[in-house]
Image 1 (cartoon, rainbow, N blue to C red):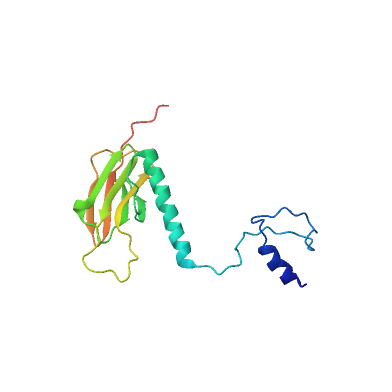
Image 2: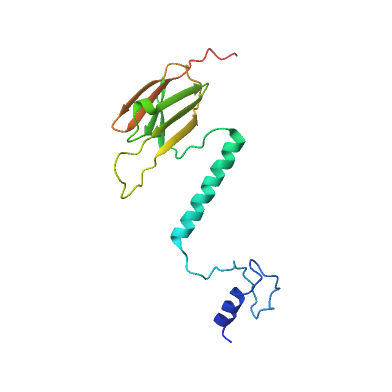
Length: 170
C-alpha cells in the first residue's frame, strides 16, 4: 500500500479530529491531525452561507447581551489632528444627512446612521446597506457641542474643537 493509500484510509476513519495514535503506529514518523472531510471539495457558497449564519447568530447574542441593535457595517474613517481641531473623515457614499446621528461624550464620539437601498433590482451588490455605527476615542478631550459637520461627495467631515487645558501645575 502506498503512503497515499494510507492517508486516504486514515482520512476516512471514524475518529475525526486528531485520532489518538502515537508516532509510528500508522507507518509514519510524524502524525499530523486532520479534520474529517478535509479532503472533500470545498463548496464556497455553502461556506459563505454558514459564515453568514454564524455572523447573524453572534449579532443576535450581542443584542441579547447589550440591548443594542447590531450594526450591519462600519464605515471607513481617517482621523487627522490640526493645531486646534481633530478632523474626522468618514466614507459614506449614498447616505443622506438626515440619516446621520453624532454623539459626543468627553473624548469619545459615536457616529450612527443608515444607508438605504436604491429602488430597482440589484444585479450586483457590494456596498453595504443598513445601519452602521462607529465609535472612536479621540486622543484628547474636545469642547462638547462645537462639532461642525459637512457631507460632500460621499465624505462626511466632522471638525471637533480641542479642549484647551489650563496651565500645568508645577
